[in-house]
Length: 332
Length: 299
Image 1 (cartoon, each protein chain N blue to C red):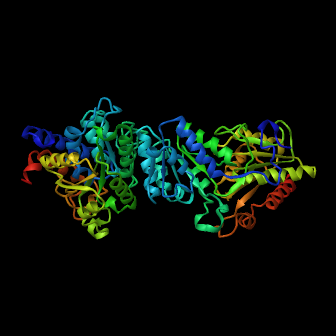
Image 2 (image 1 turned 90 degrees about the horizontal axis):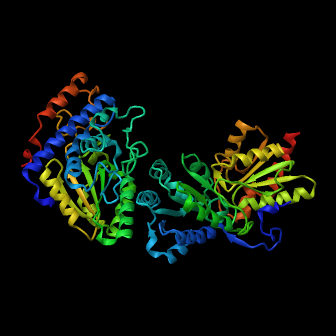
Image 3 (image 1 turned 30 degrees about the vertical axis):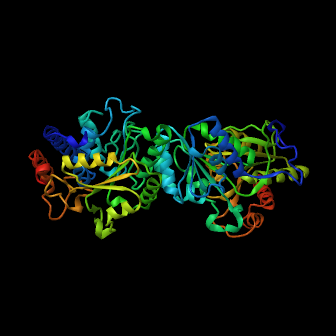
């Protein structure tokens, strides 16, 4: 059952569960960060409303900087602003930042150790009709490989808001991954959030279970639904929401692997280099455990509705269920 | 102030530049790798900046009121390090650790190792954006009354990088009067002459059309360097670029104007050049007798 200590949305299983875009949580969180700290500044590459940075721009026009369609320069301008004591947030679609400007992020932000927040919106295939050019499904891999970088992937609008506020206080480079589509609101204002901490949303701390699902981003909701369905069939499941992919909460991952001895990872990203890889890298060295990976298998996206695409690329509820069955078979 | 440089001060700067060039050769020989032509060509501009133009305090590198100098073409690090050492940031003897394991003087500048640097650099094209970011914040915090300048030094070949033009557009749009970009116009890059590899001309018209004020100077004439940068400082309604015409390898006859010396140190086998064992000795001998020639040959 849902972990009551997490104070998740009481209407989680309702058919008409509230749905809000994760990027909106970023926009609201940035306004809150701006209110709390006058050093917060915002930069955008001609996508101010799409990324929801317009909320910050409207409130603090003098602290907003329009870069034009120039993501590479934007990353380095932010580095220079950080050198002068500001806390810059840079925004674009994830495909272009941190995609196109990866080297500028590596050298002028991370190598330089500048506390810039890189907010990549429209991540994942659920961007939908825009097609494969705009569907960032490699962004976790290319950010988590850079030394000093923190990588955050919130599961809903409220967690995105908390994560954004926390990013402003982090003091080191961080990538926050945002999705465009409206997604179910899983958490509440009272749900715990801390950078670097994974949270057990399903199952009880200390209990053993048949299988552990480790999920990130909007797919956490689907993982929870699968867990609820399985538990009705007598299969006990734990679901860990990993909002911070780097640094990975290795304590929580170890505990889950120890409690279940069978792991399924779920992410809207390439299997290569993403959350699943991070979990596998850690467990292979510390507690070898059967793992099944739900994610994109070395393919580009295409146009379609978010649901069509998630189903086509193997990230639907049925795929999570299949992965659970497979890993349970391997466990025997 | 900058327009009234005295002959005595020019003489002083020439002697400093000579010492800095000698250090550059010694560093490169000790390191056994690195770039020769760019550092020698920019020695006079660096000397003028660190010994006459910059508002800075080598004993307090983090002084908030200092001018900021962003070196974008990090591969000319030897001239940055040598000038900083000679102006008192760290001991001149440390220069011989260039490119060695554990040295603060990384092959390309890294502020984690040498925190007194404004930035790390090497990958070309990203310095100007950083200087623009610094100048934007300065204007946000101090308004138009700021007394700081933001200098960004770039190589000419580096202007092939598209990111520069993103930043050039942005600085023009923001009318950053405190921003002064200095282009080392030495006409060479690794693969050959800039106009063969990727034509840049007319640089003047390019910058003007992006809303920049343009100065052209002789990068080996201290009176001209000081006056040109001084004129750039007086422009307050937009960014300025100072195109410094320099001779790559300046001061070492066999290196001058030769792109083969862009990325090699003295002691390299290159067809048609002096024997590698004699290169360092020739270079140092020529540099020691260079005093007084820098300005006069252009008068």
